[in-house]
Length: 266
Image 1 (cartoon, rainbow, N blue to C red):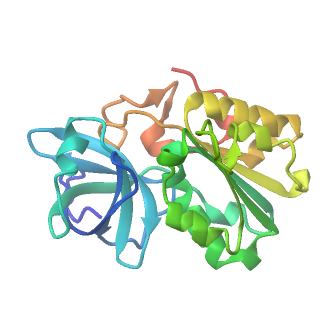
Image 2 (image 1 turned 90 degrees about the horizontal axis):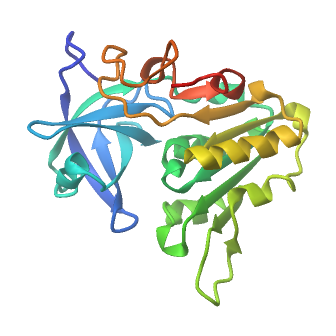
């Protein structure tokens, strides 16, 4: 992405489309070179006078990346004032993403909580287009309420070919969908545990208890993959802000196998 020898200098990238999921969560489809981008990686969006914000890749196209952004701060608030044709200043991609080759020929289960569906969207899109390369696939994704569901059109599309389970923490009377935490559905999975892989992304407590459910099924720790969210400032391992023990999340992660990730501590 960055064509300068100075890794701190961002590149202007045109916004091709803005997809509005909720009032606070929009996807910015941005023109860029995607030849080296993997699901689970992230970009730093730079705004002069305001700062930078690390944003996970939520989709990869032939000449664009999707960046799904939640409007929760100064930088993201400014970005939500942009329109198609405007340009974002990007640095990246950074980090160690998901290696889809690790999951081919296996039962693959993806468990995501809320906006964490974004960094695994690329995995799901790949499986949707190459279903025959996997033994089986299941997505379990949870949201706070029906109004908080992200990528609704994608979920409908994926459900035409894949096993998709959407659940919400709570809903008004009359709601006919699934209600309950994502952990509720893990014990009932029909998978060959010795030939299965799990990807777990979401808030820390959700990840903790979801991983625990897979361990109860006797899934090997090395077959469980997690993505750690940290406030990554520089993206290149210089500032040390994301460091856990001797591990730099921005360089070595944010994706780790659980047998390694379980030992990380601030």
